Length: 181
Image (cartoon, rainbow, N blue to C red):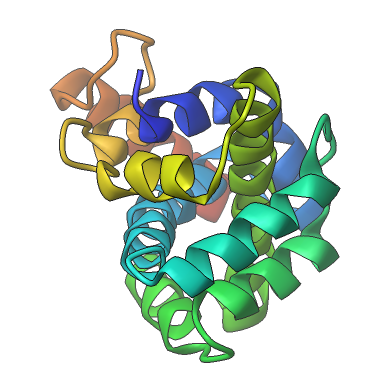
């Protein structure tokens, strides 16, 4: 299983619900942001770890995330800042695409970054001798064999995003926006 799939497995169910609760959103809006943000965050991580120095720093930072099982938005926002070099351009793009505010979007993206670090930390803990080269190799494959968007947006648990999922997602969004449910 590639790292994208591992992260998505950690996000399924309760993790996305926890993120939604922490930022005060419904699950549909949280999933919409996650679907746009995850490929962007993972893509930037992959790009960053092309630099051995950056990958080494990330590998060292994982030591503080070993065995973590909490979603920490404040820490996640710091992580997000490191990933994107302090720029909030990615947050602005995701906010615009999802129709949400930058502050709310940064909360969800921070929470996602926390989950990503937890997942990477789990991999480091599970593999004896896991080093910078292993991290670089793991992140070099991000997104090449996975459909992150489809897996995040999957509403019926069949592993893809199809017309049934679109209808369910759309109805959930309409209910939340117009009926407040």
